[in-house]
Image 1 (cartoon, rainbow, N blue to C red):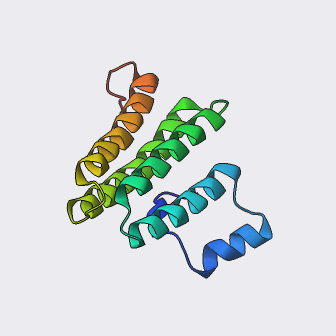
Image 2 (image 1 turned 135 degrees about the horizontal axis):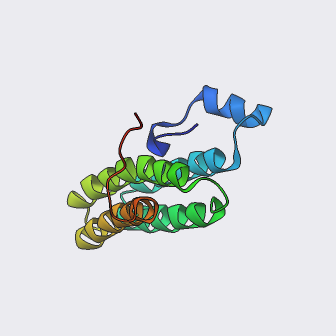
Image 3 (image 1 turned 60 degrees about the horizontal axis):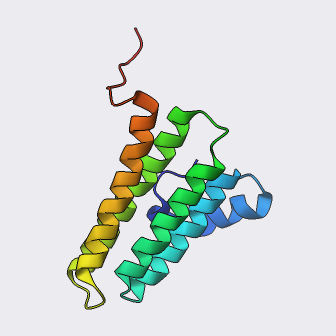
Length: 128
């Protein structure tokens, strides 16, 4: 499965897509990572943040039938590098540094909401 949408690219994922061996949410993360990388390369971190946030929210709704723990894991693993990239790019951008920072925070807040939804605000403990 896809962990960091920004670390994707190259032939391995293209081959998996062509073979049809990626699940739907992994494919969505591949597309999201590509879109965000392009927007960041164009020096549009706020736009990249908006795309990332909308896409993660949509992905969360699409995965509603799956295990909440799994959904939270996917969202957290995707949101952290996306937020870091948007925030870092926003600091050096003329587009809208404050908006990029706010969107990076919104990405992390969305991930936190997913985790709190699973744990009820508590801490998950390892079995055994």
